Length: 328
Image 1 (cartoon, helix red, strand yellow):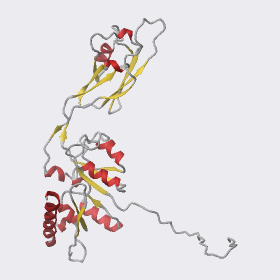
Image 2 (tube, rainbow, N blue to C red; image 1 turned 45 degrees about the horizontal axis):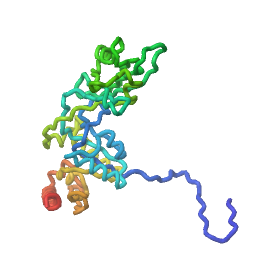
Image 3 (tube, rainbow, N blue to C red; image 1 turned 180 degrees about the vertical axis):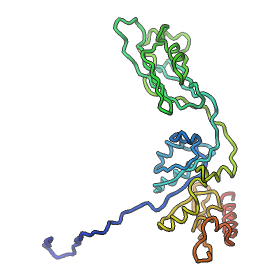
Image 4 (cartoon, rainbow, N blue to C red; image 1 turned 30 degrees about the vertical axis):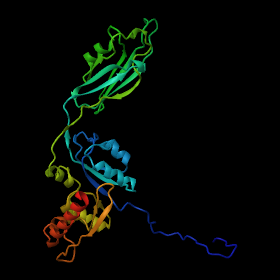
């Protein structure tokens, strides 16, 4: 037993077999819209249309890129995490298609004054390829001239090609001769300006890893069907989950979910409260409680709610609110 040496109020913790309550996330947001790029983490989903869980703005940038013209989703995600959000699902709506052109890059010279030294072009269109340059030591007794270098080519699926002790001089290890004959990933071309005396250089290329840049994607039209997506294909809004099942789970587990959507019907049918935001900076303009009178006293499932008599009233009210706050 503890000893109390002075008058006062003391708190003594009593051991208990009960589990201690701990904090847990009760709100999960879902964002649907356009992004600067498609994530490349899933080869079976080249358009990046399937939902992905993100837990920070940094992770979002790594997967989907940053802010881009015509893309409002990144602004919403940034604001969500900047204001304490911790978990979100992102559903990208493909609004562009690959250009179908080779990826390209220019490797810089070791001497900045000389600009670029070697152009690299992917053999396959829209390829995700990186090129690593490493300097190699010259062999004893070698003729005067730049040190040789090694090139390593890596593509998205992890395939690696290595070319060692290459040079810009004529001969069996000439970089154009070797790489263009043996590589299945890239072609190269010397890019020095005329008049550059390569023989006077110690090192030709600047060591480092360089990503080849893809050609700008081509815009494609987006209609309501692409926004809605498919449950089976896990694309669009429907790719988030089955609305009825999700709603039932949330009620049973007594969790709060935040759904960010541009679909008024989806908001009314799934939510118990709808908040209308203004144009940027996105202030709360109105707050609507959504109530349906179910036959058994319970709220109907989302799809059934669309046929409830109250649905059209809520829908029209929110439509007018958006006209005032967004267009006005």
